Length: 291
Image (cartoon, rainbow, N blue to C red):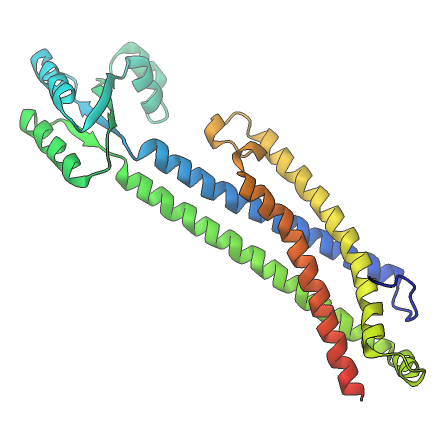
């Protein structure tokens, strides 16, 4: 247990306030960045699960009814396909609307293809190639897209963003620990005469170290509490601002798993432990040099 009676005059209101604000901002930034990285991880997994076994087949406008019927027979008879459906014109228009003038779409001047969406049974590349070959044999202008290209690219970008987020979080943590080390050393130097007097009076290094730990613990707890509240407000505000996004892609607390929530709770505790360990080591090393 820490003794909260301060013998060493470590408190300085202005500097303590600055340290508290710095810890709060660092904790807030780390938690928001960590939450973003965890969300990206979960979103990537959901994309993979929802898209990996879905394909689209496009038959250009003008494709004969007989060809479309043969196409549907292939879908029905293929053991690789669980289900299929024809996309209606309104859905096709919504897909191409960002790139085509709305008036042209409504006037019917733009030829619309026939698009089928397929639910596949497995991710076997061999089975996919067989299906593509069968479609090409029916009509060389029929295109099949299994989303592998854009999905791989999306995963690469998501992975890069996650690595960047974790790197920034680690950098901020190291910056906080380094700043604390410098501050502790400064306080040791400023109170050198008091420390020597305590040594002369019989105070042990452990007692002196506890004085510094008590001081840092009081400031750190206040900074972590403020930073945690700020992070919660920012994450909640972000979640509220994107409520128009699809439910499975929205940045909300519900998109985090129980393990993610535990990780977010443990982060300030781990950082606090590192701060106390750093303070203890810094003070002990400084005291050893005094001997």
